[in-house]
Length: 136
Image (tube, rainbow, N blue to C red; front, side, top):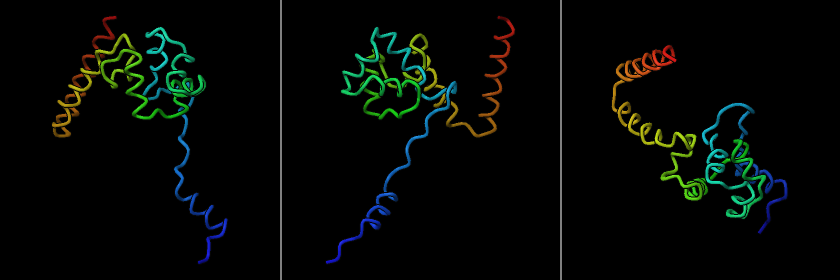
């Protein structure tokens, strides 16, 4: 039986490996941009959170800045540590955690609408937001 050459093995491994995650550019929002705020809200340091996950505080910093992906399992654990009732709350600032449920309700409403009604629904929302901003 012939064994594959090192070059064959390296070529196969290169095809199997996933490309590294692309970090979020600085000052650009990312899906979990509020993780640091949640950590602060819970009164924890990066080091304390890192110890919970058995990782370095650099890893926690990279999660909080979008430079490293957070697994779903770790998101559930973060939600528990930070006192969030559901993982979706972590996508909002802790002071706006109630918006997670509102966003879920809005998504359920518009997901069943035809595209024209969905655009109209969004236009109504934009009009309300514009009016609110003018009043401020």
